[in-house]
Each structure stands twice: as structure tokens, then as C-alpha cells.
Image 1 (cartoon, rainbow, N blue to C red):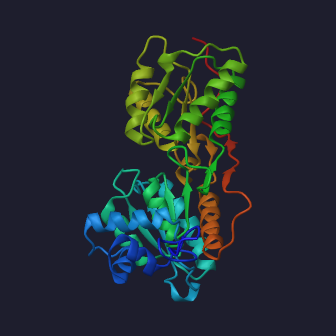
Image 2: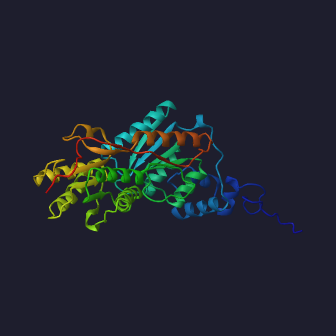
Image 3: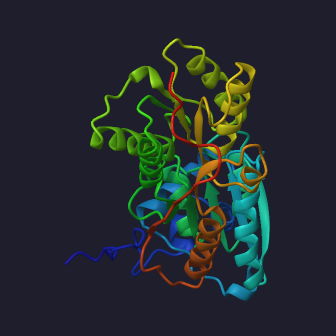
Length: 350
């Protein structure tokens, strides 16, 4: 047998046992303080050096020893891709409710419409070393996920924009079932020409709501008119713009399922601008059940998405993961519910 020591699984060359900061430093050709800086997200490390150290960390699947919870700041980072609506407010309230029970504070961040954090923001996060991270309609790339994992910073994705790897904890709602229920309600009232205005095609929740709409029409034997399937932006202007186009047609729809309450408000504005009465000339269903939907005229029929409960569930998952506990289910979809109000009725005879 050669006198050269063979590394055991997880070890660096020339060492026995799992990788340590010292063995990682030796393999990467840097100092121990440099490895520590990389692990702590310090910005004062050259990009090529950081990449070399991260590569060694990943190769050996190094995991930083779990710090005692009392030695870390009691912070949860809540990260939105955008944060300019009452929808975000419901999420914030849910996270703060769970954080208060754990005597933790919440740090809010917005990515300015991007779905992936910038490098500068991510470096600041690693420096803070919070108890965990909640990402709302935002996601991490494989390298970012690995960096959080090696630093024992758990993360949960709420209302994921796209498909996540199976080991990423996610919390959402039953979007397909919500789209199905909204469309079935309109079909049950007698509507056959039903349009849908969902959110961006890049968002998983948006596509799922349209899939539910399609399934309801197909089950009822109603042909799907591609001209009535629209993708907006989940905001008022998107609903208004697509609403005007749909309602100005000679064969306009008698009902519209809007993929968000804000888009439903935009459709209402377009209908009134064209002299149409709701629900006599047009029935409208929204999605989310934001508080404002009860007070507009007429009150909006909508699909209740349990936003606050989704946020509370995600925060509790983060706290459990921070304690080293794995949740029994890493993918949770909470139930939606149709709330019938006064914006929907049977179609008037033309």
C-alpha cells in the first residue's frame, strides 16, 4: 500500500475525514481566513478566488456546522420580486405573524421585478446570515441554493414562478383548481363565451389557472376560442388593456375570468368605459380575494387564495428547518375557494 494518504469521502486531498475549512483552504490554495470570508459572504474576495473556493466547497459537499440559534441574528429575509400591491401586504402580514411567535424580525427586500437576486444583494444576505429566507415569486439558481445550504441558511419559495427542484421547499395554492372553479361557476350561470386574462406566461401559477379554465370548458363541451385566452401582468393596466380589446369585439365575451383581482378591476374600468353594465352585460370573476373586493361596486366574485396562510406556513417551515427539522411535506398547495358576490349573473339575452 502506498504511503500516500487517500482521502475519505468528503475529505480534501491529503486529509482524513470530512472536509474542514483548513483542508478547503489548502486545496483551493488560499488562506483559512479567505475561506471564512467566502462562507460568510464577505465582499472583499476577488471574484476568481471566490469561484475557486466555492468550487472546492461544492466538490466536497462541505456543510458548515449548524450554529447555535442564539448566536445568530433572529432575522427572516422576506424577498419579493415586486412589492407594490395589497397582495404583497397580505404575505407580509402572514410572515410577521409567524415571526412574532418566534420573537424574530423580518427584513423586507424587493428585486425590482426580477425573479432572481442580484449578486450584490446575495452577498449582503450571506453577510447577515439570517435564520432563513422566504422568496415570493422569486427563485435562486443552483449556485445560490448551494451557498445557502453550505451555510445552513434554509429557504422556502412561496408561489413559485417556475418549476423548482424536488428538494426545494415550496408553498403555494391550488391554482388549477381555482381556475376550474371560476370557470365552472360562469358555465353554471349559462355563459358559453368566456374569456380569461391570466398573468405572464412565464409564471407557473398563471399557466395553471389557464389550464383550469381550459379543463372546465372541455369538460362542458364548450370549444376553446384562442382569441379569448389572454396573458396580462396581474395588474390593473393589464386587465384594462386586454378588457378593452375583448369587449370592443363584435362577438365580445359575456364573461371574463381575470387571473387576479387587480386585473378584474381593470376589466371593470374597461367595461364601464364602453358603457357595459356589470353583471347585466358582463360577468367578472377575479382571483385572490383581496380586502378591496368586498367594497367595490359591484362587489367582486373571486377565487380566495389563502395568501396570509401561505405566508405563515412558509415562515413556520423556515423556523423548523433552522432548528434542523425537516418538514413532513416539502411541497404544500393550500386549498382555494370560490367566493360568489354580485359581479356575476346569468347572461342577458342579446
